[in-house]
Image (cartoon, rainbow over all chains, first blue to last red; front, side, top):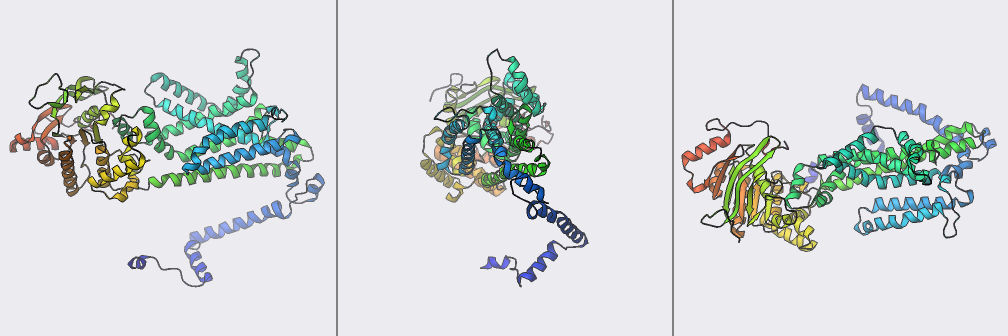
Length: 367
Length: 272
């Protein structure tokens, strides 16, 4: 066992002794690190206890205004009392099991798709899962069939709305962005110009403008009697907007694939689409996982802007709850903290998944 | 084999290139290149960088179309775009690229038998067995089959590139600098291997090299290119010492002869 000789010696001594050694090496290594360590500890001591005191020890879950008035800490009672309004918005109270079920189903499909990509047995079910799942979600949300009462989508709101807008947004913006990126690299001048103009125009305006255009301007151009649903218009606006950003991300990935890879494909007489599908895109997309997920996270948070065209997404319903009774209004810190926590949870999961995916796919690229 | 109409050399010509011209913008990469090669013959192309060697090779394999001139390969003019016949032509050619151009998203064996898997001429297990067999030919162990190309050293990648090039038993093997960046011992080994493969299979080989000695001793014919033109071509047996010195000096770019190097441009013309 000659290799063992090269290994660093195992740490010896009691736990306390080892801790002291570790601290000396990592925390008190020189005067500068010592000051940093002490400073950080002082800062955390100043910051953390009041938050715990406010958020947990002195907080109350009692779902009444009176209960909250008595508490000196956070009034989670606000969230507790208004949970269904915050989660489901103005969706009819008795039917709120439907958006709940739809939301669970959607999350289930998303998780199964993301986790199953690795396994060929699961992978072949991903597309059928969406094809079957999305109509079920639509039926649950809209109703009107199977004895479910019809719920106009202007009553949809809260977390299901946010999740639907962003997941449908991702599912459609991804291929559209990819086509735009390929269009921008195309040899055909018309296609290239069209892609460039589209990307630059959409990137050049804020999302709010796109949503306003979709909601206010767009109907003006439609002939009388033709109306396109407000939610659908917002959804299309989000897709168009995100696709322009994704297109540039993908273009970066395409440019990073060595020219030789295209030529090797051509030397095998592969068609353009074969080359793309089999050789170029697997490499290009792997390279751009971090910025792609970045775009998705940013789009997820941008869905909160639909509030300006009168849709109540998750953040919108928190505001709605705060305004539902003047007595609740002063508990906005609790309301927004709760919303922030949910948003953080979802965005953080996306970030974690992106890191996992990168690691999985980079197994072929260690050197 | 069908006879190309234009020529009548003693042996029937397998490849006939006539007045091949290729421009990228205002840069003339190939300027009236002629080439004749019979089946089973080997040819080394030498020349300073930016001479047009790689462009010629990419024209032969169909990556670039010709601006003028023709390339008759086995009776077909392959210089004009023809989407229907391209797969058939491509199947006659195996090419090793200068940077190997192995597909990083695939394993070594999937790289080697890419064509067979995509055309469906072999199922995956047949393809894998075929790839492992070829790995043996190029001196690699079976274990490397399931690795990713990026796990291999430069010399091993080169071998995989050669295995991929010969996987469909092509009639024509194009090698763009098969020994570039390898040490002399390994270079010699790779060249020996290529010679052996070509002899066993009766493959016609065109190889770009920067080594005059390898060109002279491992190939039957030699073609020296310069500024997109053929400067000298003929059987390597006809090269005497004076010739050899002259060509070697030109290859090194020393400013005897008519050669002045075009600086700052790679030999594939546009993608520098």
